[in-house]
Image (cartoon, rainbow, N blue to C red; front, top):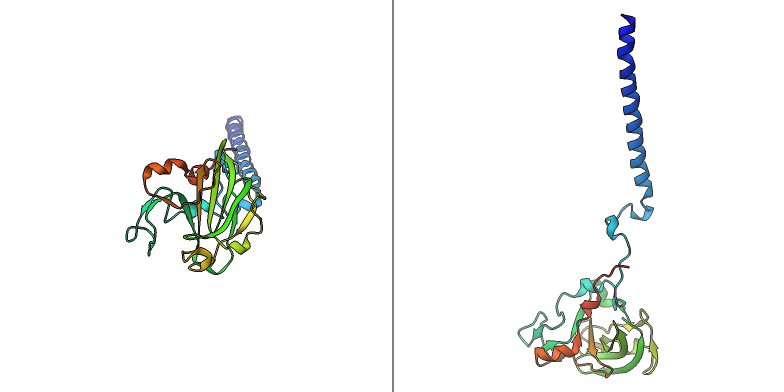
Length: 226
């Protein structure tokens, strides 16, 4: 009888020991996985491993969180007084740029604007419809273009015409909404990209066909793989 009990007990002990070892190993894997996560990610969502690499854009963002600010006037939208996402609307035509809006808390603080690419400052002036506006020459994706930044506080732009702007360099700050700094417009950034080397700061064109001479900046603000 003792031999039979012993023969039965040995397999049971082996199973218990094996199960215990397996459980310890699984717990160890879980502990290692948790420890492998950076401490900074403890309270934020962690992207899947396939997309963990930092995202980058073909150009530098002109304003923080640029893609999330395009809520009223995207590239190519047709507007006229009484027919526009902005009220009151004073312009008529197809929008040659992209408008990046500001938040309520940003109305009374300086909102910095950065150069989206490296190039020479071509225009720095006050213009009707813009207030402060600058234009720089750039090469983006192998194409020569000029870039317009509208509704800036002109006094905040320290660079002079002919000097070079570096991609990511702060150009200046947005003008105060509904003031002469923005020529009476709301506080926002109008950013337009025109093909060619000649500066063109027009904010609207009369026909959709004319938009072919412009580039949608959002095409360059799509995330790229490193």
